[in-house]
Length: 211
Image (cartoon, rainbow, N blue to C red; front, side, top):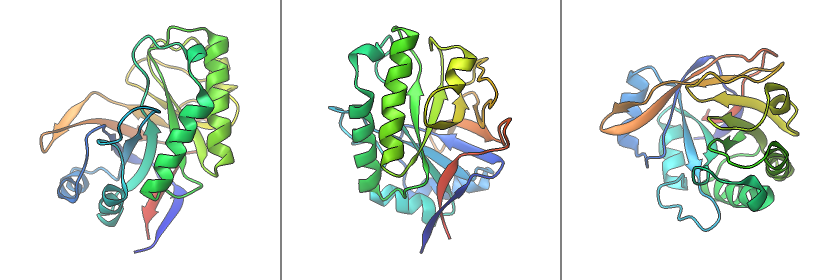
């Protein structure tokens, strides 16, 4: 089966940090979900529960689209003490090992931050620059405790798609293409449902699908 990259249609997705197998694909499709967002690990973090080639193939061959997001650091993390470029390097390497195609989005997870807005901006800029240089597109998940204004979020360099948690978040000009909802369980696995629709500029992120 051939795999390609395309724009995500308006649809329902789920995201989860749980390891998925082919057995859950049918129930997800039957429940009306068209894709999954799965995780990439951070430097020094085991990738046991993150996306790998077997899982990627099972999801895509079963008819689900796929996007990737990198794990967030511990609650209260300070971007000034972390390297956006190093974190992105781990995400990129993991995505390539899994077989994730260039041109699709990888998301940085901004939430639970105790550092400054300037440090957060620099971290995100370094992260996104590395992701884009590797041929992927860079997106940003916006959760709680992010020390950036809506205008500052929109101004983040090389980031062209935004994903909101279930809280009352805002991004100037572009808005969100993905909105997360309250956690649910399917087949004993925890999932966060997400709604995808064109953002205020008419765009949706790019994902990987089977053709």
